[in-house]
Length: 447
Image (cartoon, rainbow, N blue to C red):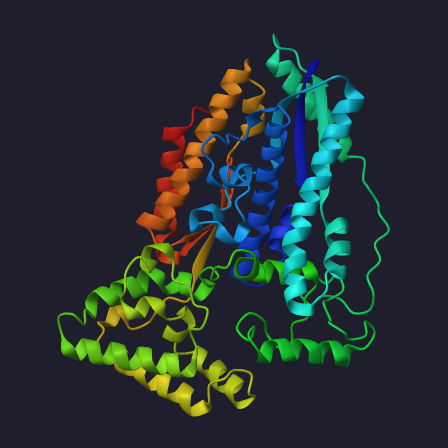
């Protein structure tokens, strides 16, 4: 038996994650890649492999995959994307041929796992799985490279494997890509789900999606959207595959720190007047059904104040012009009178606020993190123990990012794994969050 150092990587990453219109889409792209990484890790371990990177010893998602926990039973902490799209491992095999068979088998199983997620959404929407099958196969690329491992020269083996992977990725795989008729309104590449509608008849496809919006998915899709199996799967991944509500919207994140200040000021446990104005506003929002499917940021979600259960748009006066137009066109369930009532009660609530809180913030920050020179630093590690220790440090920092953003601030982590990630925070907290995480990274890691 020989020992091989293998590097397993898959994608596309940026295009897949950034093809998004809602925070649910953004999260789902990141989670899907972490989920695929967890599957690769578990499969390599089951075949006797030793994981070098990323550190998976205490990763909740990897542990769930190892134990074959059904997706619908995943606890909330497992739905935090925390794994990069690359795995390095030591694997034993008789020869190169048997190693390739082993790695190709892993690739097929992981693709099947991804297909099961997206096909479940398609089946829920259309009663079929035919489009997801084709689109998943064409979407993901799996690359792997390996070298015979030299136990005395870990850094040399790692550099050789990296060079082999780079050479493999330069060999582009061009597959015939056949998509019929009209295209998805989100990605613009793949054909949309259409039920029994004909692929060349736009009116039939539009009517199919309008019917979806009228029924239980009215708050998930806009009536002018027509999504492919991949984009629809991302939109409904949490709801259908994991039986969870969505994640906070951008407007909810933008006002999250502000609404926390308002909730503290309008403490209805102390004053009946405060209770009345908050309750009147909250009741009007509920009647107009403007906060269906709403999710607060994690820090606000641990309290019971009713303001935390109201969608961010509902606190911004300008938004009601759009709400009224949508009500006139019957695009939402509320009537124009319902919307006017909510707006009036919002203005009444503002009367009780000091001048510095009368205008809710409309902006949030998207913070992209990427550690500098991590690749060159890895090439300086002399032993596998040093490499694995650094992997453990990065995993520890990932946990710190989630704890800091979710518990100390009013933001939401879309993804953080390895040395990179995406975090959404209220604009007022952006500088403080960046400074805190930078200091934490320097404290926890050695590079």
